[in-house]
Image 1: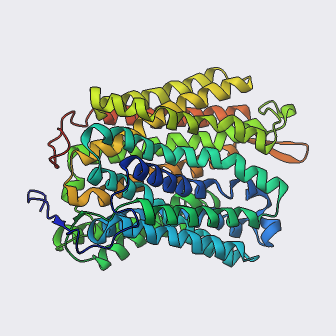
Image 2: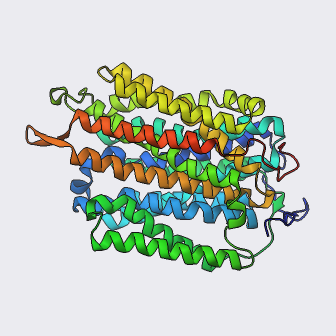
Image 3: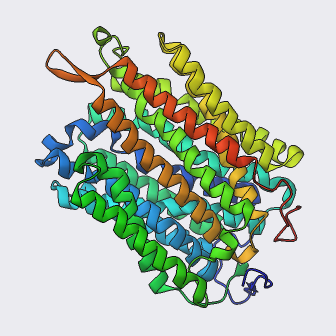
Length: 487
């Protein structure tokens, strides 16, 4: 199957529905897709400022309220590769519209609810919108010339960091100064704006992959990933060797093993594992776990360090909004350097760009491991992480698009996003476990020690260093799978 010609069909202009602007300017299409990506990334930091208060606000236990965040990660990981495949088959723009509609519905459900059940359902629907980023990148491949593709992909990739970084202080301000439901009303409003812009300024797809939806494959992938991600995200709370944790991880691995065998045998699989096994795709995806881990490690540790009381010896005593403003510029850096990322991708190639970006992240964590006694130390380290993530997130889609058929762009980028999600989920669980295990009582509160943060930084260094090593195994000039992309 992997050696066959890409099965791509063109949709005739006369047969497809048109947006109000049949041929919108390309820059406007890119801007709208980037806005949709920002909305998607914002959903991950939307309720972060409320974590400590959720048990009181929702009248539920802390274990139950942790699902408000966990469910979004689970749905995002499962829905992203599936929505990518649906986009390849039925139209990427059409699937983006559906995902934004789910974001709106989920936000309204949560905004109108005061119970934990309603909020969890709403957050689950919000998680599905993560698929708009790989789908947006796939649309760019279809509509942009090669000399503009790298910069646009870098911009779209940057939204995954920018949306969270910019959204954090906004969410913190609303959490401190307004009713918590306002966060979900804001999310609904962003979804409405994004949906309207996509309908008007994003053209219908030209390339489609004929076939059928592999429903059995989608269910198998969802069950397997849910088992693994439950183990990663809830294992520390359940106990890593508890029956619930072991059942989740063993069951997930067994299901994924059966799913993989089925995917290799069935016609029109959800994911073509032969394509996913190509060295360029395989090593990029495995390295993506390290990049997701490194990115989310800073999201977990830096705000906590900035907000902890100064008398603990490990904090700076900042309030929630102030800490978010210190962290925010890293996301802005990702967007500012997107033209540079695109130029470097065209000049030196995506693989060296990935290696350089991952190396930046290693240096950033080494810096904060050696110097973290002043607020500006955290600020500088976070900026370096922003540069590194900006380069690596720009490089990964380009590496994959040079190695996969045109009719599998959405699914392949969705799979890459899934691997990043595994990294972010792992970082959340591991960092949280380390900080909880290495804590002391200060004034009746449990506070992570300075040594706990050092261990977290060492783990992030290891994750980023492994990504650097894996990047060296990525073929520098993979065989081009699409005539518009040079090898």
